[in-house]
Length: 276
Ligand SMILES: [Zn+2]
Image 1 (cartoon, rainbow, N blue to C red):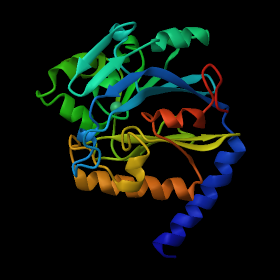
Image 2: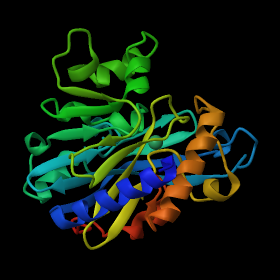
Image 3: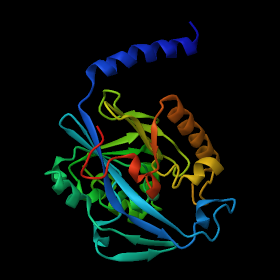
Image 4: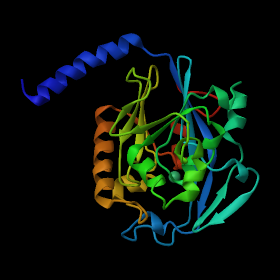
């Protein structure tokens, strides 16, 4: 039996097993801030978007699998709430914290078992410290970069898991990672934006498959015109990841949600409604 057939057989075996278990799972989209761009130029290394103004949203996601909760990405810092800050081409804002939104679901930060990060940028880790008891899931190469000595402010924001002698539970993810062990939620290796960048694929019983990009894409135009941000760590890896992501989305007939694109907000129910 050749390799392709072995893979096909494995998929056939795995498929019904996952379906039979039909995990009790739902997902909420949380508002984790806004990023107004005075110039979208830096989001292409071939001058695709020079001079364009653009408003991006910042999204986090809460996923419940039976009695366990995963927070996917941790947004902008809570200190920004009700204020705004200017950095580089960005004006940053935050209306509600993650804890505010958990409270609306009668949850507290202590209820979160797992915090998964697509990558280490500031708009994805800002409120991670609110969940020191949670297990951190981070790409291994991202964790290495954060502890390399060149990213001290980032390291401070992830101190419970990555400071020297930290005792927080951490999984340094190499390749893909089956988050709950039942195939329902998987982190996908999508390197290039950062060295250990991940996307997330979620299989919901009624909604179907949803793929969250992380920052593989920031807005829809990048899918069609292959806009690679000038600040990505590896152009070739980014293009390879885009190829993998697009092919997988097509094969799984997935709903693709670009986490930063406000035009994708209506692809999931509006909080506090969940996708089931
Ligand atoms: Zn981002």
